[in-house]
Amino acid sequence: MRRPIAAVAAVAALGVVSACSTPVAKQTPMASSSSASTPAGTSLTAPPVPSPLDTSKFEQDPCSVLSQSQAVQVANLTSTRKSDGNVAPICTWTDSDHNSVAIGFVPASGGLATVYKSQDNKSGYFKVAPDVGGLPAAFFGPYDDRNDGGCQVAVGVKTDEVFTVGVTFRKSSPNYGDPCAVTVKAAEAVVSTLKGGA
Image 1 (cartoon, one colour):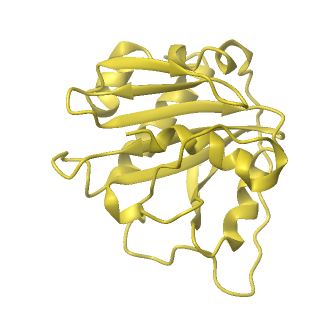
Image 2 (image 1 turned 135 degrees about the horizontal axis):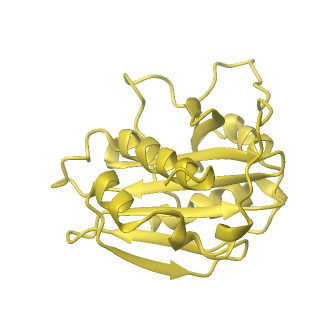
């Protein structure tokens, strides 16, 4: 269950920063089984971050970005594990069945513009996400396993920084069929913490 850790790695792998080591979590379409990528011949540009947030407190300590009560509300997550990445540390929250949510910050990476480069990845996926707490976001991954209980989102917090949330759910999980709902819920909780509202 290490795929979501690559939420950070996937941004790195887009070519701006070096990657950390684990594959990526997946994403299910938000409402219907829409296309995994942008239409042929189109190239979207990342929107600006309207109100950059201070992430310095959490970049090296991502496990502190969710409180225990927030983690339970997101997906009944009960334990955390911090791991090192080449870019920045990653925190993985898990439940008793090893379903997981991983969160990491990717500073000095080119921000959401780097994520938008993945819209041309033929084996992966890219989809503009609804704003998360007023911040621009995108679903993405270097390979497309969105129908297998996973989802990944990057949220722009500064011009050159995103945080990523990746989830992996087993088939037995009630979240398996709509993992993106949990991804967005976790991202909203992170933004709440960053804004001081947690």
